[in-house]
Image (tube, rainbow, N blue to C red; front, side):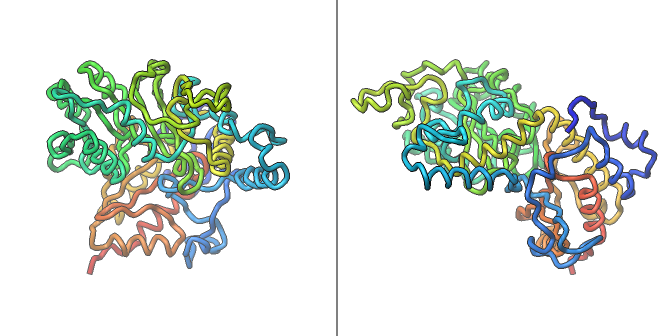
Length: 457
């Protein structure tokens, strides 16, 4: 991608390209623009046939599917296969020596370090604040230990109603283990009647009114169902002003939108790496702890061998010598094969910037929104839950269907090799991903959907 060329707004392209924006020619012209090129050639692209499709809008079923499910599982970077095979080669030939020496430059004892600079840029963390470890919910449990500290007067947890189930379970069990009644302590934020998303002013109002009793504010960066991108900096500032700790689940934000965790003064955050970070199902996750806690060794935490400084770790005298920063919150050594997969994905990210990808994403998702609002059959039968304000969303648009036809619509889309995530009772989440999706795919998606018979009978 030529990062020297400026990316314009969708309206500017409509005004300058000379094609009807509702035509295939416009989409094809957008895909040819140097500033809007993607990294599609660095990913394995499943075909219509391999994804269960039996027909194509144009062409044949051996062409790539329309994969708009990167918000559920990212596509496989081609380099993953190479990286994993290299580590298998090292394991087979050098065995235990692979921990400390590696012909491919990735000694296992510190295998994550080569790709951390790119991950730090993606989430806006400084060296010593970001690491790769465990999985998202495990990291949530680990970091609730030091950052949820209930007292008699400050014990409440502020979170969204209908949070992702794993977050809900983790929150409830953490409170229960501390002897706190979740029914009394958890404040669950709901949208206003008739609305799908939370208003920032309503969140800030609750923080202002309840903050003296809130021990921890826990929100997603992006809401998994609606695609709403929360105003994290404002939430963090408001929470700190009332003495609250503030943490975020960035499962749908990391690799999707620019984040500035250090600058926003976020206390801690966790994320998975199999969605926008393209690292395979159940892949190793990530975590952030602000540098202001780097030497706060008195804070409760669960520790293990990898929390111990490397230079004294193998003395084995059982005198705990904690790492500073995020590394002091680790437990165990990395899963080598999983870590090498995320390193392969981060190698793609290193060729551009998250800000650049965000610019492309805004145009790509904006184009999807425009088409959905222009083609009559779709416009009549599908509404968009996700905020229209680009500041309040990432790449995902959550499309609301009549629940009676949700399964029928999903089966119809799959028959064309269109893969978009179904969430009951009434949602299909379409996420054209900046790294590998095209404008022509967006066009084809809307045309296919517009041809669907929305009759529920």
